[in-house]
Image 1 (cartoon, one colour):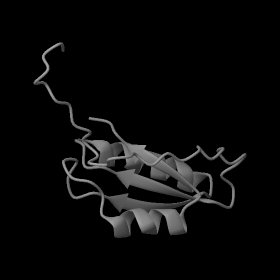
Image 2 (image 1 turned 45 degrees about the vertical axis):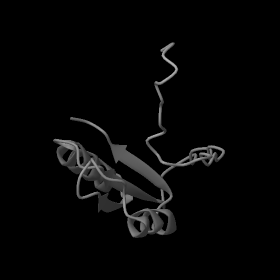
Image 3 (image 1 turned 30 degrees about the horizontal axis):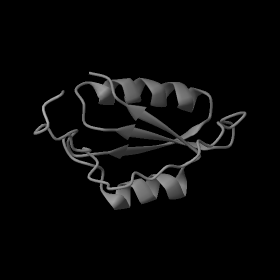
Length: 95
């Protein structure tokens, strides 16, 4: 990496990445809604199906959200819907 012509680029295309403090997790999921977010990776829907079954057995509400493909960022409306209607999020990154 000593080549002066090598240039690295931030894949987020942000000139100054936004930093946000991490919110503490809720003490309990009882009475809360968990967003299950499929980013389009292979078999991630199977993982989320299993989690949804487990959450429903515990009377924990869920909402399903998905990106059309893992190669593109999530649409702003999808992220806004997750933020507006969920207390916690599980992002399926599994292959």
